[in-house]
Length: 149
Image (tube, rainbow, N blue to C red; front, side, top):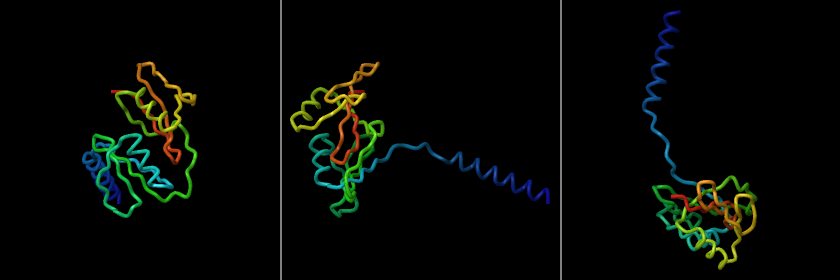
């Protein structure tokens, strides 16, 4: 009996280590936002943030897929009952070469933004010199915009 358990233990250990060796490193694929009004969200993500659409398989008028570079994407899915309140620290971050120019786009569209401390229409300068702001999409999801390289 002792030999059977020992043999079983060796098989389990070796099988587990084989799986660990076969496991590949994770990489970012996509983030999904569940929204109330897809058209309103599409305007924000395409016209304000300037994200390009990518093919989506559903073709049902309830999905919008957007490229965020390096193979990553945002999936915007219609069906939420109402927008919600989210914490600023739970956010998606996008980078641009010119945060100041982007704030002018927000001003022209009458879209407010905040700094890291929640101060209206202010820009945070991190200790490494990176500028950053936070803006909400139409459903209340926070998006950080910065000029990190």
